Image 1 (cartoon, rainbow, N blue to C red):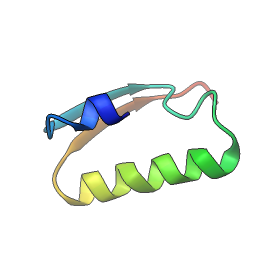
Image 2: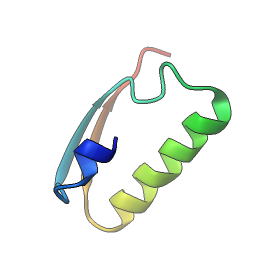
Image 3: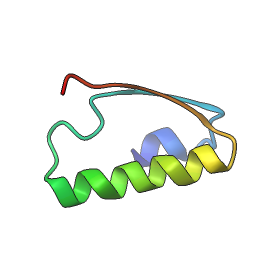
Length: 49
């Protein structure tokens, strides 16, 4: 995730970004995505659940 955010992208393509995380870590990632989206970053997320 750090590598994806270091260049301040305008678009993030996330394929199962929380798939291998526990529920607390998954919630933290989703909060980061929400904050980024509030700042104008477009996030396309693919999940299977």
